[in-house]
Image (cartoon, rainbow, N blue to C red; front, side, top):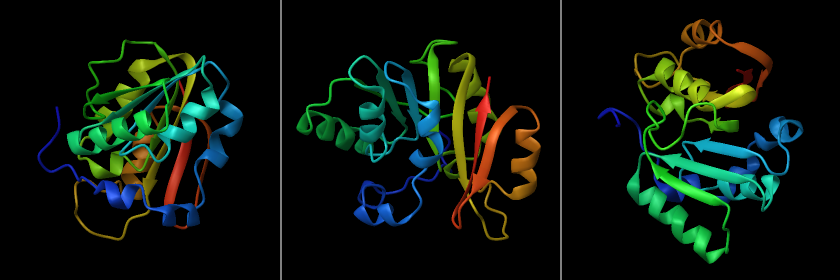
Length: 184
C-alpha cells in the first residue's frame, strides 16, 4: 500500500558511487549490529546499503529489503544474483504497511532517508516498532529540509514531536540529514 504522493528516487541516483562522499550511516550503527541478526532495510531502493548490511550480519543473518517501487526492487534482485548474495529477501511494500514481516521478529531496522519520501511519517515509525523484537533497535534518518509545505518532508517540529513517542538511544546529524537510534 503506497500513497500516490510518495516520492520515488530513481535507482541510478540511489546507486550512484558519489553517495560515498556523504557520511555513511553505517558508521553510526556498526556497534548495534551483530552476526546472525535479522535486519529490515526499509526503503532499501536498489540495495546500496542492503548489500553492506548483508555482509555485516553474515551468512547466519538475514536482511529483508523493503521498497515500494517494483522497478527498484527488480534491480536489487538482479544485483543480489550477480553478487551471489543469499541472505537477503525482498518485499515490495510501503514503509507504513509491511504485511510480509511478522510482529516482534526483527533485531534491527535500518531506514535511511525513507520516511522523508512519504507522507505517512508516524505510521512508518509505528510499523518499524511493530516488527522489532522487544529491546531491539532502529536507525532512522530524515533529510534536513528547507522551509516549505511538502507533506513528504519531515520538518524539525514534526521530527521532534514524533520522537517524543519513542525511547532514543542516540541521535545526531550530518550536513544533509538528521538521525536517531530508537529502542523498542
